[in-house]
Length: 209
Image (cartoon, rainbow, N blue to C red; front, top):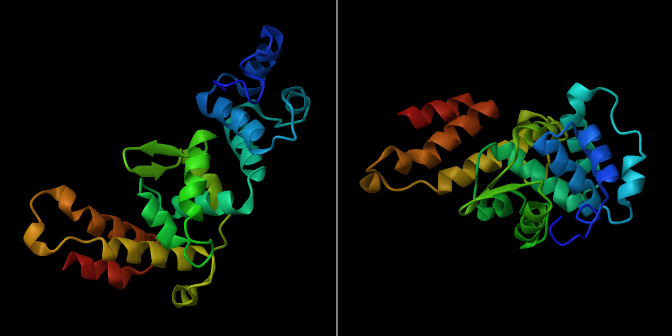
């Protein structure tokens, strides 16, 4: 809360003690606590502290992550779900490609930037990814669907999204003449893992040939 927008920067020690007690000082729980305030500006810091959030201290990280996620708008939730489907750091273009039939053009890239600022999404040079707790929670919110969904571009299910995610990596392959190091095969390795996750075992096996 570097600019003091959500009230943490100027909070008293007593208030910060309460935040610490709620989050147990876990870094991801603290980020999720901030994320709730950043995502829903109608909630004040005192109001959030007075809400009955979580019952089991050992689960507080997952509880706060779920609470923070619930305060996001649908576009932001879909972007997080898209990152969860990839389950690895990917460029913004990958998320844009995956959600082409669900979000307006440019929306995913815009939302990614917002989610990074709210500490929902991590960023490394040129790529975005989720903390494991966020990944598991967001992926759990995506309907399983059925294998037939793979050919239905408008379906928002794990089968449909994993198929499309694998196709993104397929289109990212380098020609054989440019294979110099293992990193040059990263698209194939990523595609293989996503195909397996989506139960496309024959397509995954063909990659090994």
